[in-house]
Structure formats: C-alpha cells, structure tokens
Length: 212
Image (cartoon, rainbow, N blue to C red; front, side, top):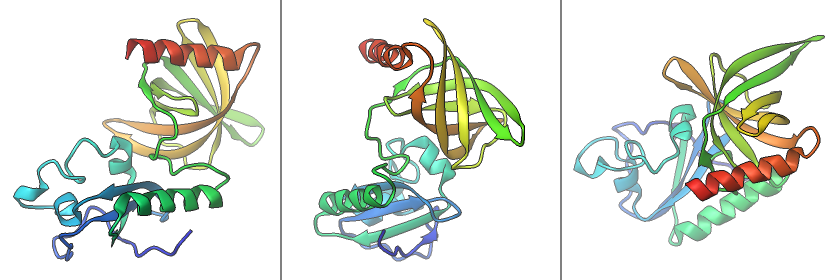
C-alpha cells in the first residue's frame, strides 16, 4: 500500500483544506485503513466548522457510522479524478490484503437485521462468550452489538438465532467501535457451519433484500 500522510481525525481547525476534488482515507489508532472515499470538494467535505460543514463527512450520515466512530487518523490528497484515484487505492489495498476490501468499503450490500447473537473467542483451552445481537447482514459478514469490545483480527465463532433456527459461523473481527453502552463489532464471515449453512445464510439474505 502506498505511504499515506496521516493527520488527526476529526480534522483540526488549523488544517488548510483545498477547495478542490480529492480522496480521503480513514484509519484506526494503528493506522489500519478503515474507509476510502472520493469527494468533489475536500474543504466542503472535511471542514470541521462553518456553514459548509453542514451535511459533510464529519457530521453527515453518508459516512458509515462505525467508520466515523472507529477512526482516529485521516489522510487526504487532491486528485483531478477522485473516483479513479479512490478505485486505485481500494484495489491496491485489496491486492495487499488477500483480495479483501477496507472494512467499510462494501463489496456486498448490507441489510439491517436484529437477531440474538453470541461471539465465542478462544482463550487458552477455553472460550469466552459475548452475548449480543446482530445489526446487519451481508454475503461476506455482519455487524454485532456486544457488551465489550473484541480486538481487530481476532478469530471468533458466531452463533446466531435466525427465524429459521440456530446458525453458527466462523469469522474474523475487522473493527470495534463504541455505540452507547455497548460496542458494535464488524465481523468478516469465512464460512457458515453445519448442514446447509451456506444455503441458509444465502436464503436469509434473500429474505432481507426482499423486505428492504
């Protein structure tokens, strides 16, 4: 991945932001990339104060909520063709990370879905269980609300109570962000387990898409 010039997130008042198109990259405290976006006006998108800040990235709703909460670092740069530059950065990231996208650059659409869920985290010879509920589903993962954070890159076993019955899946935590008194966790799913697990996951997504 190209070397990025990281700044604090959210942007500080003293930042000199150009009134030009460009791209921005959000990272966590360890400078791991969370989200890559294009904008036609960096100043209008990133200014922390003033009239132009209304509806911007820092205050607006089009930025994925988890990314806004989990971010601690920002890279921005001018680009005459911001969308082409965004695509290049996302593809470079994917090539360096086993063909996976940044956590908030969705390859698959996500659908809201609230179901009882539990995450199992191996610890020595035992497993710690974190009870919670799902927030959304996609072909490649899901969001879960838990009582405590789980570090990124932690393997987990997710147990779900779907309308069709229980379903278990193996996954990897990509990010954690506070949400009220709980923590929202983004999980990449490797494989649903059990007889017909993949088929049941796909059918549940179909039902969510139909009702969306």
